[in-house]
Length: 512
Image (cartoon, rainbow, N blue to C red; front, side, top):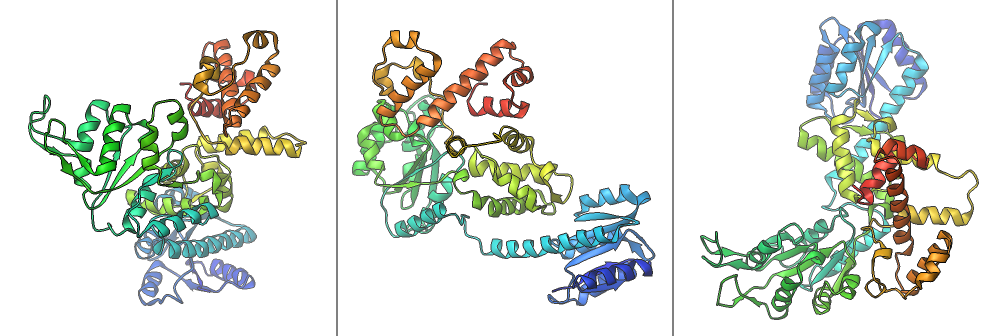
């Protein structure tokens, strides 16, 4: 193991720390001033370089804060512990901005000092392993079985030009999968062109896809190639295909059928040969039943379906992804990467992540900017994470039956879907059997709930828990807000839930 470097002009401090660390089988090397440390760094090898640097602030021949800055330039990942007298605490706090791991106020308790150094050593070793993995990390990360299935599917599809449909919740990384399919295909040297069909107004989407001729409409000053032409010989990624307008679906079907299309305002058929990969977070079978998505287009796109799991279905990947995103955020912002404690990682992994991997990436970016210390602790996590896990702990029943546990797990694991108010939908539209109005009026709300559940279960749907839970929560929160004239904190108090919980639920249930 590499030694712990101790820098202090006080011989007694060096002696006490050396003896205490040696008793813990931790090798040491001592210095009296920063100049000696910098000189030793110039000649240090990978094996005898420092594992941890423990430095005083005020020493003859240089400041510990200046040493911190210079060491971080050479070894950005090295944990540095700053020792300081209480009068120097302001300086020690500012040391965190320079990337200090922690500070140790003098006079210190020797046991606590050794414990802090031991924690820094463990963190350093863990980060070394993590950094080694990151160097060799692929474009997608995931150790969970569900993600390994995705990787295997990408490998099997690598030599094929077959059309692929990627399904998964928003933020789960569907475009990353599409890029991986392109990168490992025979078309890797061709262009990868992506278009979000839900983000472009209907009037412009046709021109974006197929291009237009000069003068085709007001403002069309020149001829423009569409995405199909731009993706020739490569891959065209159609994101959120479930939101494509119905009339454009007909044109898309024709292109997929014979490979020919016309630019807007054009009269000459153009042939294009991109590989098409589509993605959606919606239930396309249900949209076909509702008559808003063409069944023939669905079958044309749904040659191979690749389901991407939500982050809550692969919680074991939260650890790896968090460290990856913290490194990535630090690099983007030009700052020292922050570390995250095991306790904070554990709490983060229990969060439901309604926004999936994209939300975790945003949280890591927030932590890089907002966390006060170099080591992220549970209290440093964003309010929505702390509030959600705190509320979950408060709301846990003291004596939970196995059935209750399964129900709670089902609700936590249920996918985030738009609110479906079945009471306002005609039975023929919802695909549900008719329930007599007299029955509903005379029955209690529990009996009404039973009827709704029976109807949904009879329809063959697989999201009954999610639909009914969301309806129940939506109605409960709306009623409470009506009672308190929109005052959220008061509504949360009346419902017996936390302020963060009601805010999160309002966002999840689209009740803004």
